[in-house]
Image (tube, rainbow, N blue to C red; front, side, top):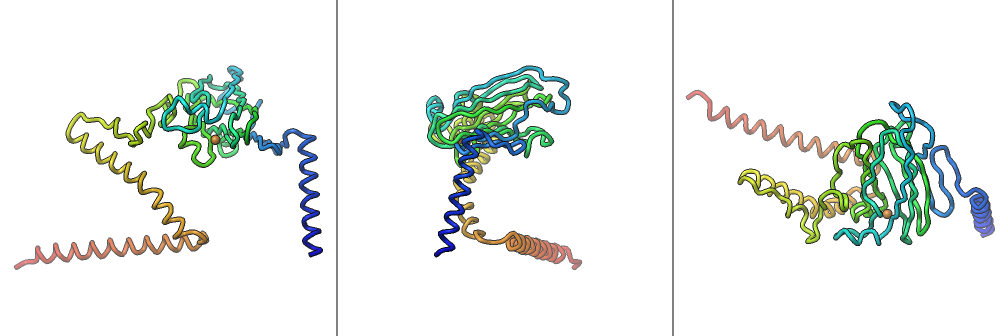
Length: 273
Ligand SMILES: [Cu+2]
């Protein structure tokens, strides 16, 4: 009992001192990651280190991005969104992003595919929990490339928080970006059915199969994941390895048996009379 009280007191002291320090320092800086007690975070901040291939900063760009459900209204089938879903900058631009969260939940502006020597896991990532704003800066690499920007909170990407940053000429358009690329799920809710090409019988049959497979995959995936969750929950990495090794061995044995029986049958039909 006494020990519990002591533990609670110790915990409270640590929390209070952390809160006190957070009030003194708006942002705690851990190298490339900064966060404060209000749930504001900047990861992969880079204001001055030039990526390989950049000789100087080409331009300074300031983006203000609002995030929230009100920005999803113009895109049927989405629930969350950004005020813009596409931005264009020059190669080697220094980009300062001001993310304004208009919702009461957590939202992120997470950019993927940056060089990993400058950005941990190739990411520049800022986030705000609840209403508020945060600002972070990164420097774009010299290549023409299209980068994925999204909110990685569960289901937010699927529900519309997906965007692209085009550096230079870019490298194409990413799929499923509200207002930019064709919606993966149309307003009627049928995945891609409206866009299936019907040029030749062969290709329409093929695309029909692809669409059927796609729909089956989408419908089946939750069940597969649920089954996998129930089947593998609580298993250690070692258990999983041995499970998959055993299944692979079973599969291999099955193929060997099939091959042997096929070969026997062929040998039987071809034996000299
Ligand atoms: Cu979000």
